[in-house]
Figure: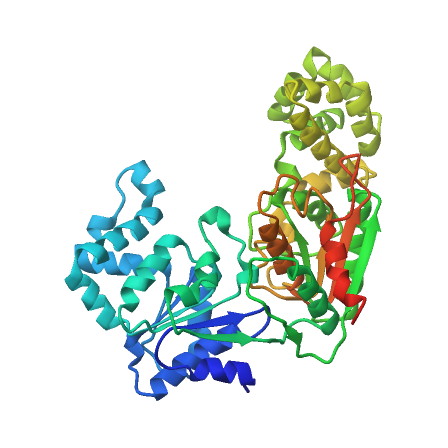
Length: 500
């Protein structure tokens, strides 16, 4: 069933149309149903082009379309695949293969620029492709860049049958060249374009929807919109203050355990502004044997030289060091490494780490390694503190060796995708029954040196709108042993909530 706004979108036929689709508003359904509707009205499937930004999204869109009994023959493509298809048709596949390292590095950038030049300089080629693609549907239109916009404009020609679907409030990829100005100025570029707003959020409960509306309303450069929750559930939001990163991780682990134990199907999203914030929580989940997954390559504390240094000395002290461990121990702790190892051998892993840091001079080693740079010194201390937090939970030598021998892959259960760890950016397009957001503090979200506060707010908006039933925001009292304060975004979220 389609709601009144979706029906209006699906029924659009000729001419330019912009669909402003808020979180959970059914934009994929609109694209699929509109494609099927065009075919019902006599448009051949091969004349329809559906563009997304990633291969996964294109594949999922096509699967959804075919599952809903859409006729075969529709072109589902990413921008890069489209450009490659046009160029290879004109010049052949072999001419496009990069031969030098520089060509490999600039391959994707060249696809766009070369396609634009081809269509601008060869009218016959442009006319051919305008004839092939009579109707163009674009998903995530807020992420389009200048080059992509101009190519679409060329392909659309005089017919201008562009059906653009997106949400300017979720424009978060300026670092890739994307610019929401193309969506915001759609009517200027395409005079007389239909503008349709999808107003129902089918994902998030009412309290979460009201709070997200309150947050994003503080942005000035946007389409005015009011998203309404279509769910009966009120939902639940929590604002939790944690003393430091360790207490935060302990809280998250305990909360995740309760959620997983309380339901066989519930999903949990653990979200964070930057990749490096995932290191400690990853180790906590691994040490507690809680399966998790992520579609992103997240850093691991185990890969850091500090982790390897401390492990080498513990293994030396516990009589299990190999040649690599001995060389590392000698390099870091000098000629006294054997004496230090003898002391460590009489201690527990927890006490051994304490001794290495304070009694054996490892803290001084890190100061020297930082080279007098206070920022680098602080980063190293932050990493050391995170590693110490993990080691302090290891009580025996047997537990230590089990810990270091447990590979990261063994801690993941790909068949049990119930706990996801993602950056805010990586979470875009996903949804979870329960969302927990780490480190909602000034200096982290928004970032300390953010130049565009509206984009910082959009990034946070994307994160909180992944939640279906509950949303938990965690703030720290101290971060890296420094006093920190709750993010301004928390107060902005609560303004409308107090009056609802």
